[in-house]
Length: 140
Image (cartoon, rainbow, N blue to C red; front, side, top):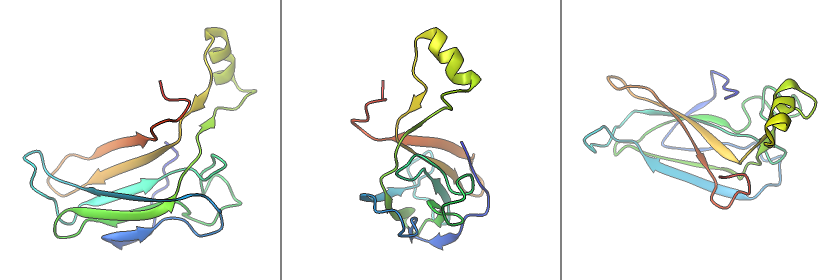
């Protein structure tokens, strides 16, 4: 999922974007808990997503290092909060073999807008997931 290790880390709350993309501002917030529902203080929530053009920092050299990539350590009640911009979805290379196969299957190669998450805490299994945006035309 175009992950890059070493994103800046903050406690509880963070701004993910560098301010150069005039996208729509969004806020993400959540609570990390264990399987019994007990909040997990000190869990690490690693977030990253594409910009409004559907490209990711590190791979898109026009963006600043670690733009739209952050790690947040949850507060004493397991909460985290991030300010960012709404990402755009993207597609596979239109001239590549993946799109060629999808064309043969009658399918598009677009991904809906989404945000990636790695969540980890000592003594717990690592969670890899993502969220999509309601109403995106590429959701099934």
